[in-house]
Length: 348
Image (cartoon, rainbow, N blue to C red):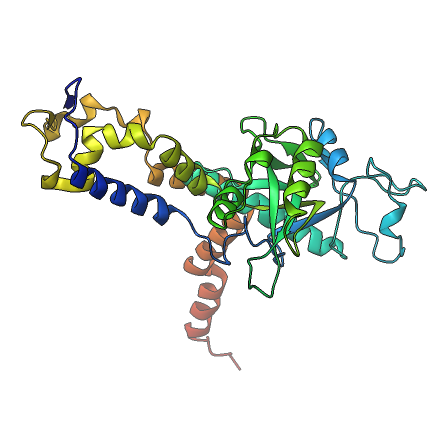
C-alpha cells in the first residue's frame, strides 16, 4: 500500500530545474517526429492503407452511422471516378459503396483483410485502437525541405466488420472519439506555427476545421489543405500522453512520488512521506485477484485461442494428416506378412 501525506514540501530551485529536465526527457521520449510517423508523413503502403476517392469527405462521414460497403472493383468496365455521386453511387446505377484506389478486387480484399487483422490484434494485445479514417489532409514542409509531407487533420475511429459472405463493411467505432491529429499539433508548435485556431474548432465540424487549416496554410509557402479521406493504421496514444504531461505539468511536478522516481535520493523527501508495504507473496492473489486485471499475456492467449477457433478446419485437417502418418497401415502390414509366409508346394 502507498502512503502519502496531504502536503508535500516545496522543491528548491535547483531541484525543480532538475525535475523539469527529467519531465521534458520523459515527454520527448514519447514522440517520433521522424519520417516513420504516419500521422506526420502519410504515404500509402501496399496493403496497410486505402485512399477513399468517392464519395467526398462529408458523404463518407455522414454514412458511417449506418455503415459503408466497399464498391466492387470493375476491372474491365473502364468507369471513370467522376461518374460517382456524393452518396457513392454510380450515376448509371451499376455499383455502390466506397471507392478506393485499388484497381483489382484481390488487391482491395487483401488490404481490408490486413487492416482488420492488424487492428484487431493490436487491440487484443495492448488495448489500443489504431484503425482510423484520416479526414482532411495538410501538405506541409519545413523551411529548407525539398519534399512535401502529408498529415491528416482529423482522426475518426472506425472498424471493419465482415458478414457471412466474407464481405467487409466500414462502421464507426462508437466506443472511441474522433480527435484532432495530436502529432500535427506538436510538430507545428515546434516549427513555430500557431495551430491553436484549428484545434479550437469542434472536431465534428469538418468544414470549420478545414477552413481554419487553410487560413494557417495560406501564410506559408508550399502548404495546402485538401479534403482527402484515407483509411489506415494510426497510433496516436503517445502524442495523447505527451499532451497530458504538458497540460498537467504543474500538478505532476508537485507530486512527491514523481519527484522520488525522477530524482531518487536527491528528491530529499521527509522520512515517512512515501512508504510502500508490499504484501506477502502467499497473499498476493488475495490482495489483487488476477482475473480483475488480466495481464497482456492472458489477452494474447485469448486472441490466439480465437484465431485457432476461426481456423479450426485446417487444424483438424492437419491433425488428421499427422495421425494418419503415425498410425500403421494395416493393409500394408497384411501384404508384408503374406509375402513372408512360406508357399505350399504344388502337388504333381
